[in-house]
Image (tube, rainbow, N blue to C red; front, side, top):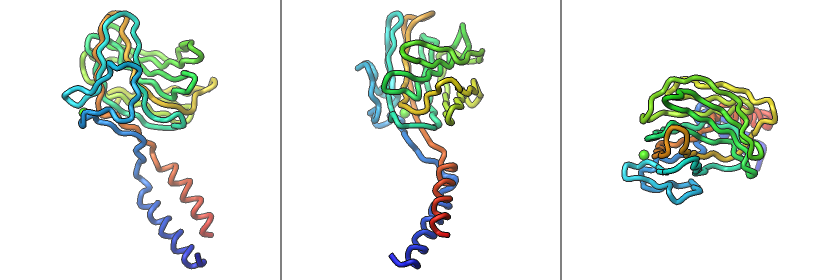
Length: 220
Ligand SMILES: [Ca+2]
């Protein structure tokens, strides 16, 4: 490629990148409306897509855990959002930065009588409480949950309201898969968990800035 052609190519690439500067990269998206939970890896065959285009699992019993995993082990920073409804149970939970050895973070919203949020870190089978606090919410309603992981800073939003903002400075988990988590126990021995509109995005602003810098360096 001639020097002129190279410069023209780089300029074009720069313009394309600049035009997409405020865009966001979709890492994962599933609304279940086609009846299939593409990209999910459930640990139980009880996870199904219902006739309303939602992903659900129903469990009866005490202390029953189930997960449906999605994403990649190399996923680092992300913004996860989804809608979640639990019938007859208080737990709305998502796992993230789930590593191959099972270590992970878990964000939980609990309804009445607790009305609180938790951030746990699972390390070698041990559950470490990183944060808990009161958080007003209602039972048997859809809640919009968002988890934002920015390096060691972990933020949890419920229905648009910040529920925690925690910086993990003690051996933080920096990458991993994600999961929808079902749990029966405590006040209810039954849970029908329903999930919809799972979206994982990676804000591209900082990424583009890095690439723009590289291309500018090449072009000089
Ligand atoms: Ca749907």
